[in-house]
Image (cartoon, rainbow, N blue to C red; front, side):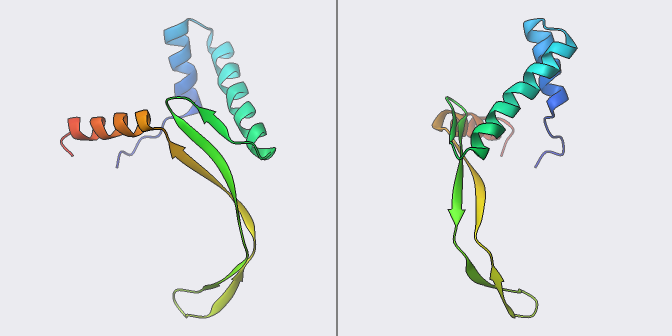
Length: 103
């Protein structure tokens, strides 16, 4: 797996280079988009980005888990988890990129 991660700053730089926005405006735009996505998820809405994927929330029920070292049972509280399902186009792009690198 690659060691580098795409950051907010990388996205802002790409906007600056490709669209011609100032660095400040690019950073503000990236932040606003991410805020809109986060706010929608907090409200319990799914976020669908065509050609990229869908972010959604799932409610997980309480259950009994086990400590893997000791085997001791421990309660796991109910929680809400974020999941991402990539689109078919994204899966194909990632698979193609993997094959292009000899994987």
